[in-house]
Image 1 (cartoon, helix red, strand yellow):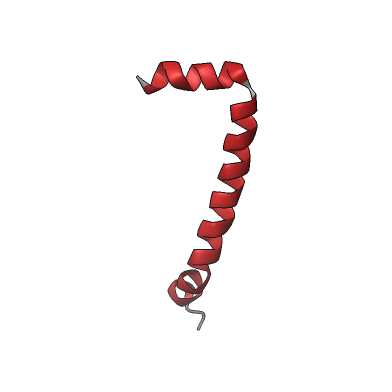
Image 2 (image 1 turned 135 degrees about the horizontal axis):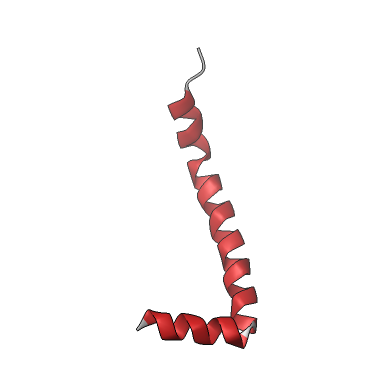
Length: 45
């Protein structure tokens, strides 16, 4: 039988790293766009 939980636990850190790096790139791109930046600031309050 295939242990889904074991396999997921083994790769969970790698998944987290991948998601964080992708989000980091997206946030960096968004930071370059001042309209998005202003939108985030308005909605953060």
